[in-house]
Length: 106
Image 1 (cartoon, rainbow, N blue to C red):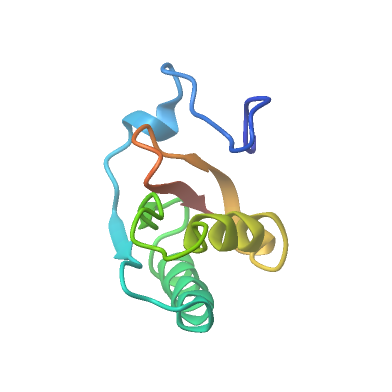
Image 2 (image 1 turned 60 degrees about the vertical axis):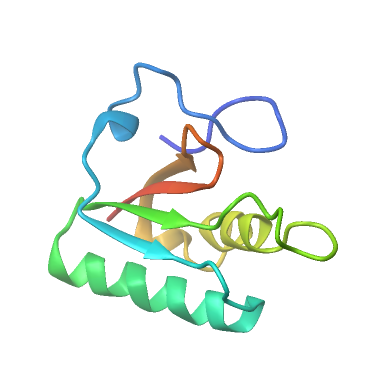
């Protein structure tokens, strides 16, 4: 499984078990710059992958309303999940509040 929906960001189907799953861990990226966020997300997912295969984690990016220009973190995390961190992730999608991503690690 992977991201769903035809919009700009994947969205969970209301029946999606990933949405209902209680998060095993949470990473809040508020206040992080792009470089810090990239490192933090990688370390967070690697840690959870070692700790608990199949863990569901929540990566909070915020909606980007505090950014002086366009939102940065949400797009950055999406790109990471689709590319360089893909091997760490079984499935992922935008959370129901669109302020982060729910991720199931491999």
